[in-house]
Length: 190
Ligand code: IMP
Ligand code: MG
Image 1: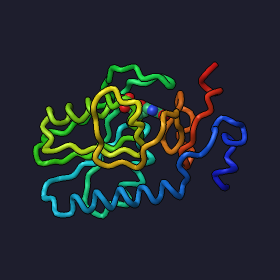
Image 2: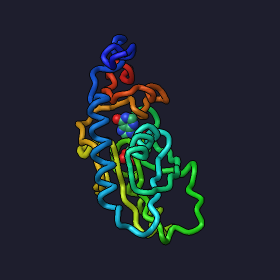
Image 3: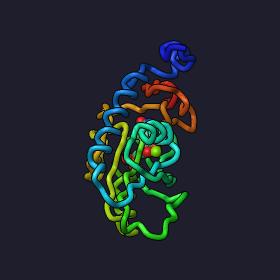
Image 4: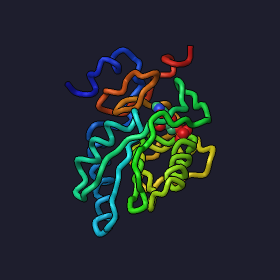
């Protein structure tokens, strides 16, 4: 099925496709090549750390496109409900590793909005002894920043729209869409 025929598009829930499957494929090729280039001569351990649940699809693509050896891990944080950020970050699932002193952690995130999640996690992992912490996001909404934060690897900057698909949700819906689409305002402005 072509993504344009998706039922969420014909129902009007998705206003339009922001990032097609083809663009996602090109973007994940580019990011994996950047990470490969930056770490091919690194003699420590590289851990790619997916932030559940939004990053799982992106993480799956990136990890299969990397050629350098990496380990994978996951953390889960919560702060969002619906389309509103709660501000406070809670760690729901922690990273349980004894020693991070020889490891560079590359955090894989779906999207950066206020910047609070990634700035908190970067600091948290540094305090917990990681040799270095890098950040990688598929999407970035720089106009929404509340804390100063610049990611190391970025798929694409996007305007201030609420987007779903390719792992991203609204109230746990739409994560399985193979593209990123703008959620129609009529879905959440009631
Ligand atoms: P931040 O801490 O404000 O940067 O928020 C980042 C988190 O907010 C992401 O991991 C997402 O879970 C969520 N988020 C922000 N914008 C969107 C969006 O447009 N669609 C879906 N989730 C979003
Ligand atoms: Mg998230």
